[in-house]
Every structure is written in C-alpha cells, then in structure tokens.
Length: 382
Picture (tube, rainbow, N blue to C red):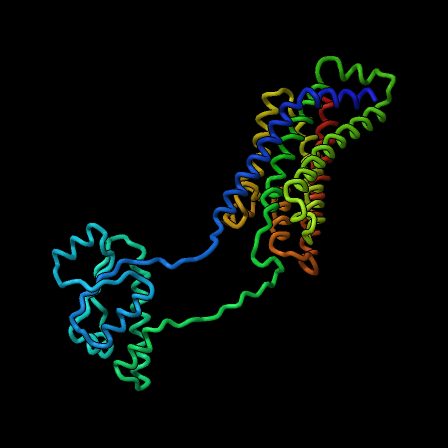
C-alpha cells in the first residue's frame, strides 16, 4: 500500500487547508441561513400615516370619509391655513392633507371629480392613502347607484370589507423553506474547493522529479498502483462527504433526518461528490505548479458557484445566465436542491425530474473522467 500511504501523507500535509475550507463553508452556511431567517416577517402591520383633513363640507359623506380613514391612520382636522399646512408638512407633523370641498357629494360623487390632496414629495405611503380614498368613494358611488341616500352610503362605505383567505398547501411544504436547505446549497463549493486543491497537490507531487520513472520501475505493478490511487482518492472523498453529512445531522438533528426528502438530499450530495472528484482529477492532471493550481481551482469553484445558483439563487438569474449554467454540473445539483425544497414528497413527475437531474450529473462525472484520461494519455505520449 505504498501509493495509498503516499496519498494519505500528502493529505496530512494539506490538513490546514482542508480545515480552513471547512471553517469557511460552515461560516458561510450559518451566516446566510441566519440572514434568511431574519428576512422572514413574523407578522404584518399596515402603515399608519399622519393625515390632516380640511373639512369645508361638514356633511355625512365628509364624516364617513374621516371615520373610514381613522381605522387605518392618525387623522386630525386642521384649519384651512396654507402657511400652517406647509409648516406641518415641512416638519412631518402631517404627511398627507385632504381638502374636502363644501359641495363634497356633488363634486366627487355626482360629477366624479377627484379630491384635492397635498402629499410629502417622494412619500410612498401617499399611494397607500390614495388607494383607500378611491376605494371609499367608489363604494359610495356604488351604494348611491343602488338607491342608498348620502348618509346611508357613507355609513355603509366606512366599514372596511373583510375577506377570508385559505391557503392551499399543494406542495406539502406549507410554504416554508427548511433551514438545512441553505446548508446543502453551499455543498458544491466545499467539495470543489477541497477536492481540487487536495487532488491537485497529490497528483502534482507524484509527477515531480524522477518519481514517475521510479514508480514505473517499481516492483509494484501499474495495475496495483492505479488501484491504490483510486482507493486513496475514494477514501478522501468519502471522508469529506461523511464529515459534511454527519455535521448536517448534528446541526439540524430531527428536522433533517425526519424530512420526507432526506434520502434525496443525501443522494444529491453523493452524486455531486462524484462530479467534484472527477473534476479534481482533471484539474490535477492539467496543472503543473501550485500557483497554476490555485488559479484554476478558484475559477472553477467560484465560477460554477456564482453561475449555477450556489451563491445567488437561480430564481434571481436571467434566462441567458441560466442557459449557460445548464452546461455545468452544479446547475443540475442546485435544480435538484430547489425541487426538494419546493416539494415535500417526491413522487410522480417530480421524482422523474429529480432522477433526471441526478443522471445528468453522473453523465458530467463520466465525461470529466474520460477527458482526464485522454489528457493523461496525451501527456504521456508527448
């Protein structure tokens, strides 16, 4: 097991780098998860606006509008003094002023004219009040058209309508995003960065000096050397995958292990591990020194993660970026991850789509291995 021990010795020399990327991975995961949890509002509260009303009418319709707005906002009756109103707007004592004309009913209901209002420039809350005033006046017009008197229409319109809404849970997730989703979203970055660096350093070390010639002249057959190399690479990958999965079980405990799609998360991460391992083998063959290795690994790991939905969710990307990302394996990992988030129970067409995405990842892994073997054969012949 000389070759196997050689691999493990080089891995020990890179343990600091491995620990560094593990720390980065867990830090990024926890940070983004905490930020996502804080963005979820616990309740909704309508915005209250300071409204001043200049009431030149005094009729039931004007009083009905005042009563209606008082249910949502801080409403006060003010004098029709332009200077005083400008001062109140300047100091934000009032954000919205309504001037009710003396013939309010005839002007706004019969003739359909708009109320004269004054707003704080650039205030988004003014649109909220505009909508409520229009809604009140339209309701009054409807009631009057149905035969209601001015007073009856005002009393009926000042009562806000309520609607009962029932949310249908068609996907089985109740609209919630599992917390461990963010953990598994960033797994490709961990796998690509660590495996590419470690395998690159190992393969580079085995190509230095006269070591390749000594290995060819060794009593250990090439078949055995290749077998030990594969065993070592598999050991490295499985240990990394095991650390990742066990850590997720410890952090999320029953929330993860009792989730209906738990096995699919595990399977998706395992397939991604094979993809990362195949890419790392190719990177190790094409790089010749540590500087070149660092540059290639950063381009591959960060490039794929930014384009394929790891750092920026796919839903925020335009169609052009998604089209390019489809030619990269991490895109299909994140597509699978998103489907597992969207659907609690993976059955029927959804299961077919998930398995198809997993199969595409495996095809990428096989393609990278074939490319690596071709490059390796070409380098030996040169």
